[in-house]
Image 1: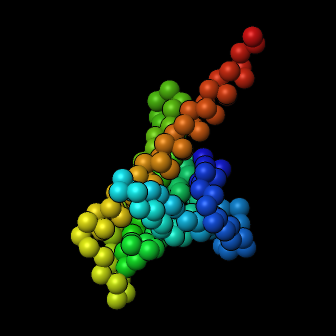
Image 2 (image 1 turned 135 degrees about the vertical axis):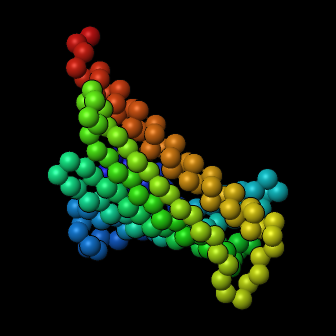
Image 3 (image 1 turned 90 degrees about the vertical axis):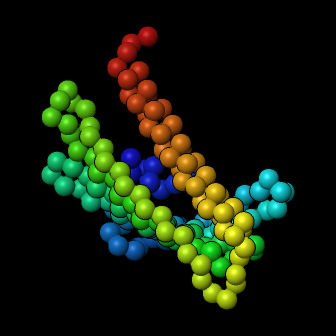
Amino acid sequence: MWTLAKLHHRLQDREDYHGLGCPDDTVVIRYRLVRTLVTGAKVSVMQRYIFRRFVGEDHTVFIWKTYSEGEGIFAGLLLEETGWVRHQPSDEDGSTVVGVCVRQVPMRFGSSSPSQSEAQEFNSVMQSSLDEDAQAITSTLSRLLLEETLAGIDI
């Protein structure tokens, strides 16, 4: 799970920052999200992402904060996202209980005044980005689980 937190699928203008916080438990990156809208317009959002892991005796908690700042026609729009995931063993059958909470707060800032439709497009782009991250993490976890299962089978 820790490797997945590093968002290796986000490569556009990516910068990794090292030496901040506890290096074994902290990820700080900046990257640009670029999309083409249905209108054909290219849009971009600069994302700053901080992720931290806390390991307890019987659980692990991951927390993150992302600041997504609109560029171009999205200038003046900002989305702040805060989230956490907690993993702990279940009392039953060796499974794991996972709790997740994500909060997104869209904001306007600066002297720029994007239209209502631009703000809606911005929110749509940000939601699709969250969905992409969830899909990338889920598919990687599924692949890792399959590899782990197959490793114990002699074919």
